[in-house]
Image (cartoon, rainbow, N blue to C red; front, side, top):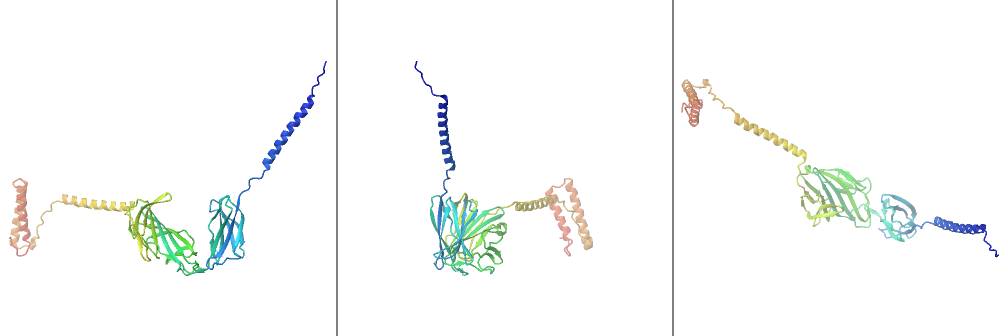
Length: 398
């Protein structure tokens, strides 16, 4: 009989145990690699900055600048670095997060602030170049040109809400910088009946000369923005804006767009869409010189105070008129007052007594139906006239 050998159960256990251990070790290694794998590195970029004096054209060597970052909410500002340019007015900002943030480089020169435009760094943007220009200063406003005035008028039943945007171009190579606390700057007059001034830019204040703008204006375009209210009734619903400087372009946007207005020195250009709102656009065809005006006349609106006032006045007039009519209708016939007998001569006194007696008899005859009304009135008026004539000296019984 042949003996068949059978493997030991303990040997099989060791084999499978070893296999399971190897598989477990491999799994642990894979998980360890996954867990310890470094996160995908965030993309970065750079900004190459050049600072130049725009008046002289020379680079600003050794000039201090500040790098700022704004996230998607531009109001959230973060200061990243304060550095100094090299002798060529250059500086390289590297390792900047390229996640769509906006970067701005700021500096000051002759106490005037200057900023670059927003430099966005999107993923994959790499390196961006930007130029920052500073300027020498002047108090001469010759190079300033008022290129446009925009008026946005929101109409209410009692008040006009007006926002003004004045566009000023500095066409020179010097920053217009009025000396502080001297009252120098650009002066604008507010329309009649304006109140509730709200400056929306720095350097704007209300003075006895008018609205004074004394902030610096660098070469390029600046916008002066402010708002105010106007009482409609006090200006007879006619808004007038006088120009303090020569203006190349005037635009008036009226809301609601269906306002039925008439304009002076402006042309109706129809309804325009501005953002989500519609406005009636009025604009000039030729420039408006200093001292000239544009005017927008709005339809008169009766507010509830006016309705009450005129309603009460009409009610009073109606009551007075009704009283007069009723008084006339119910006014009793006044008895004929005889003249004073002391003023009559003896002859006239006798005649007067006879007339009174005749009038009395005539009244009795009429009341008894002996006379029709027409005959009664004619005869009685005749007697009455005779009685009145007796009061005239020397007239007799004519």
